[in-house]
Amino acid sequence: MGKRRRVAERRKTRPAVLGGMIAVVVGGAGLGVYALYGGAAADERTGATADHKAVPSGPLTAAEIRTASARFLTAWQQGRVTRAAAATDDPAAAGKLLTGYSKDAHLKDVTLTPGTAKGTEVPFTVKATVAYRKLSKPLAYGSSLTVVRRASDGRPLVDWHSAVVHPDLRDGDTLVTGESGTPPVKALDRDGGEITAAKYPSLGTVLDGLREKYGKKAGGTAGIELRVVRGKAAKAAKLSDKTLAELSEGTPGTVKTTLSPALQAAAEQQVAGRARASVVALRPSTGEILAVANSGHGFNTAFQGSLAPGSTMKIITSSLLIDKGLASADRKHPCPKTVTYGGWKFHNDDDFEIKGGTFKASFARSCNTAFISQAKKLENDDLTKQAQQVFGLSMNNWAIGVPTFDGSVPVQSAAQMAASLIGQGGVRMNPLNMASVAATVKSGTFHQPYLVSPSVDHRTLATASRGLSARTLSQLRELMRYTAAYGTAAEAMSGLGPDYGAKTGSAEVDGQKKPNGWFTAYRGDLAAAGVVQAGGHGGDTAGPIVAKLLKLGG
Image (cartoon, rainbow, N blue to C red; front, top):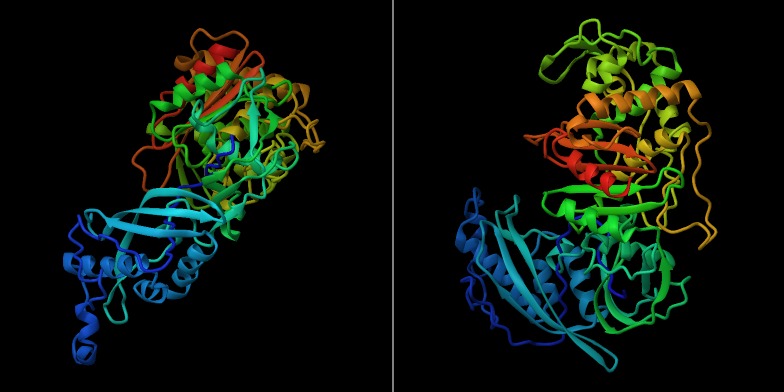
């Protein structure tokens, strides 16, 4: 459990640090060997006449890409930091990071081997030795660089990002070898079994977060390791430091979590066969998180994602409309084909309409216009207050034991305010947030989700300032039950009743052919929510994932 994995989003990086002159073979991809022994590039030799030539423009040629990448890789491997940095479009940043690798990361004997270029991108492998005091360990990884043309003079240069050095680095991050500072942890599930990333691949980022939060409190001792130390931007994104190599193991402390081994295994299995899928399951009566899984393991979308939730947001909006007397489950409610508000024309899927239907029918079929039509009767901050005061969202104060994004329901106006009623506009959520919404409806009051019991570190959990009224709560449950039995969630929830409820959602995203599919539901004392990005309608994509967990543990 001493291994640290990234808790964050995809990054490109490439460590490398040089310790003196190193014999290296830059070949394979045809980059050439001219630079390996200090040869000058053609454009460097002809600098005297450059002013009399037109500035090169247009797409880079294969020769330019080979020359630029070879110049950079050769200088880097030889330890000529100034020359390597000058071969990039940001010499200051490149020089600082490359200098730090030999000094702070203690990497030596660096060998760089380029692969076959794909357009302007050149992949390469790095082999080096991490050497600290009397300890050493080999390090090998792959990275890539991209060549761009500088506008001012047309010169081909390496497009500089910290990811060029190591794929786990974000701009502003550094590599450091030394005492880890944070002891490793041995994480346990609710039954006392050890949690490892090898057993549960989705939990790599969670384990990083647990180490960062509880490493010093759990009684362990630190080891010696090469690690990514996050900069300001990565810390703002709530990314944890990551261990790349352990030279000596520390002694782990023990942290017990609320995770269910059976549900966690099922969650991993359910997302494994789907691209960009995430799911969370929790216990409504307590807030205990029982499972969290992502099909992509580099970023914990389930806890830290920030995505438009689509029509699953209508649970919160419905509670607001019922509270204000603007809707009632069995009262007739307009669901026209289109509604215009704030200069925007809002549509239903396939421009359907429900003539003479009830609000319950509009909720179950996910009629957008039924909600947009009420925008003119609402204040700009009504939805924000409802999300904060009743559902505990959008206040950035959850303390579950690892980093999370706690949802965002900003105050908006005009068309954006109307769009937020149906989970678009500026509203952002993740599966943890939406599982909590379903759990609040099931339990009748908000219980902040948590992964580690607050008794471990005596932290204070977030609370909601008010609960759902008995009238609103009974109607919300009826809306979700009807949707699970007869609405857009019926196929996924088949056979799971009668103590159940659900809501589907589809969120349009610019540049995606298919929307993000959402599904949130409860059954008994279990609530779950999932999203499949660019998957299509929630009932068909995220629905089966959530339903499987509800069937197993509800």
